[in-house]
Length: 127
Ligand SMILES: [Zn+2]
Ligand SMILES: [Zn+2]
Image (cartoon, rainbow, N blue to C red):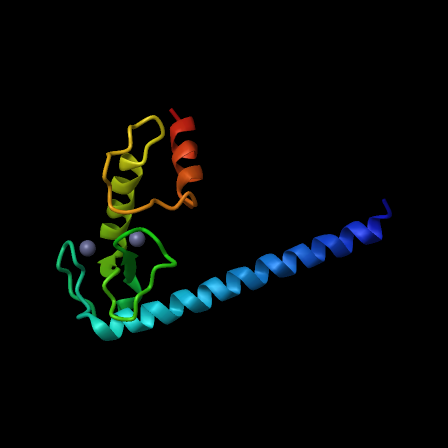
């Protein structure tokens, strides 16, 4: 295979990935702006209050952990500070640990796409 073709294939793939990432970032900016309009700038866990100066540390958490579920009324969003958001996801990882039995009758169908699955195995492989 001539190197030229491989290069252009790689370029095309890079562009697709870059586009997808841009779309995702644009969408995240979008629901973040909406959530910040809907809710007071207070962390839902530690109750820390935020101002324009530090609001970038206030993040939008998805209650059902599905980032594609963004109802306009904000029912799936929760504003959390960076630290509490990390904690929240660490707890979620514990719940979905491989080998753990999934609780029966859990809330709705669970997406098979789990962006944190790799992270979990990475963390585990450190032991
Ligand atoms: Zn917090
Ligand atoms: Zn979250």
